[in-house]
Each structure stands twice: as structure tokens, then as C-alpha cells.
Image (cartoon, rainbow, N blue to C red; front, side):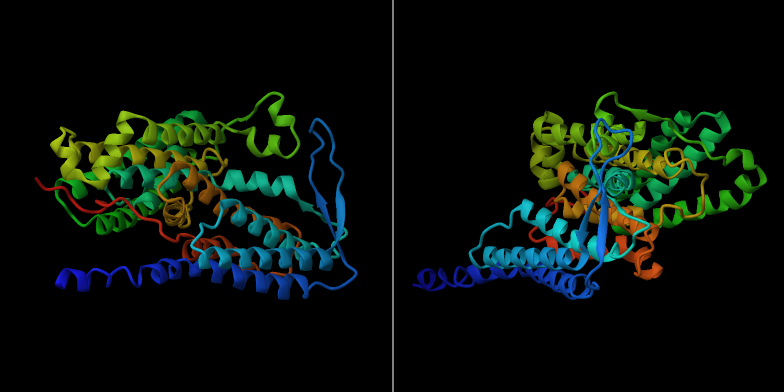
Length: 429
């Protein structure tokens, strides 16, 4: 009697709870669509036009610039965003999964409305679509490497909050070694070594001594910031030759780099961008199509079961944490040798924490982390584009745009993202 009476109890509220967890996405989409309609649509002066430029002079063929009525374009695109929001609400009500292409179409609609509003009446300037997309890819490089670093560590059960410190260590070491040797590629090789050293310290305290992994990550970030600031103020200022602007060569892929839009966006970069492509593809295959990936995921999900079949849990975690540090250090090279800049204090500017958000938004998958990192890189590129055309948006708001995009994306789109079950839990035999 007792079993029969209590059995229906947990199943009764299951369906409402399932739907209620998805309302954050719909609310976020709705608020942004309404803002788009009121500010970018109805807030655009009537009679103004916006000019969009697509192709470049070096492309195989020239795509002419086109001009659209600013207000009408912004209003129509905002209404499209509202319709997509209504479909997202329908998905919540019917317990359907909101398709990824719906989110892409929504983003294109809101972005088009924003650009139509920002470029209205600016006859001397135009919206550079190719430059905007190319900038998104370039600016996402450290975020992609950082998110992949966190993914490799957390898939094995170690929380990597120290991505910011690993990026900064890679940037500093890359700049110093490149300047000392006069070769930017030497700096590119040295950067992942510095990141791996930070990862080794993280693994030492997190895996061997069972220290709280979040605390260790925060301390390592502060430690690396302190060390690099000290060395910058002493060693590099006294020896400017150790902090020169060294830049990697740009490699244009024949034929592919001449394709309009796609060519400059994907096939006309430094070797670091191509290494990013290779790293994402390699991890996507290795994590889900290899024995190594199966063992890593087993260690991150159920270390006791993994140990019973002969997998060395703590050894796997140490190796992955060091590997993750090396990947993040490689991303740190973007700030110096890839961008052609000398090292500056705290020049990563919180990129490691945005990379963590990209990893979560990408649901601990390499391709998902790539897409999320490119989204945040696009926010950075959009900030630069709006500054170039002289947008009416205050510069302070433009500076916070990438971080605002991070908050909105994580708050509205994460949904039921579930981390590895044994994440952050030391394995004690």
C-alpha cells in the first residue's frame, strides 16, 4: 500500500519542472527582440539609409555594395526576431528542443537591426561585413584555446579556473623568447610550455594534495599576474630588447583565400589560427572517437568505475591538466607574437574567464566551445566595427559589450548543460 501511494508523487510535477527550466532562453530572446524593435527599429530616423560592403578588391570577383532603408530594415528584422521568440516559446510549451539554427537566425536578425541603426545616414562610411566576420575569427583565437583547455581538464574531472593565468603566462613567455631570439616562431613554441608549467602546478595541488580546485585556480591567476607584473616592471623595463613587437607571418592559402567573404575570414591568417582549426578537429575526434577519449570521459564521469577496469585515474587527470595548460598557453601567444604586440600588464583582460563561459555554453564539447568562443569574438569585433563607423553608442558601453554578451549567453542559452559528474571531486583510493 505504501509503495502504491507514494509512486505517483515524484512523477506528478516532472513535466512542469521540465518546461520551466527552459523559460530563461525565451525571456532573454524576447527582451532583446523588444529592445531591438524599440531602439534600432522605431528609434532610427526615417529616410536614412545604411550601406553594406561585402567583398574586397583582392577577391576572385567583386560583390557590389548595397544600400538598404535603415528604419524599415531594422523594423522588419526586429519583427523576425520576435517571431523566432514566439517559436522558442512554442518549443517550451510542447517540450521541444529549440533548434540551433533558430538561434543563428535570431542573432542575424538582431545584429542586422543593430547595424542598420548604427550605419543610418553615414554616407562617408559603410558596414564592412567581411571585416566584421574576419575580426570575429581572429579575436576568438585565445577564447577558443582557453575553452579547449578548460574542456580537456574538466572532462577528466579537474576544474581549471587558472585559464586566465595560463593565457597570461603564454603571452609573457612568448614575447620574451621571441624578442630574445629575434624569431616570433620561437615565442610560439615557448608559450605552451609556460602554460603547461602552470597546469602542472594546478595538477600538483588539485590531484595530489586534494586542495579545493577553484581556490587553487584563483590563487594561480593572482600568482601569474603578480609575477608577470613584477618582471614587466623590472626585467622588461630595464631590458627593452626583451619586449619587442614580434609578429608571425600571415599565410594566405592559395585559391581559397580569394573566395569572397569566406577567404579572408578563414584562409588568410597566421599559423596560430590554423593551429586552432587543427586543435578543435583533433580534440573533437579524440574525445569521442578514440580509446584515450573514452578513458578521459570515464575518469571525469565515474572515476571509481574507471579505476576498477585498470585506468589510472589520477595519472590521467595530471596529464590532462598539463595538456590543458599547454593549450591555453598556446592561446596566450595570440596577445603578443600573433597580434604583433609587446607584452603589457594584464593584457589578457579577463579572456580566461570568458573562455570558461564559452566552454560551459558549448556544453563541454570542442565544436560547441568553438561556436561559443566565436560568438564572443564576434562581440569584440562588433565593438571595433561600431567604433570605426562612429556609432552613437557610448564608448564605455562598447567596451563592456563582450562581457555583456557573455552574461546574456550564459544566462539565457546554457539550459540543461551538465558538467562531468566527478568534476572538482578528488579521487581518493
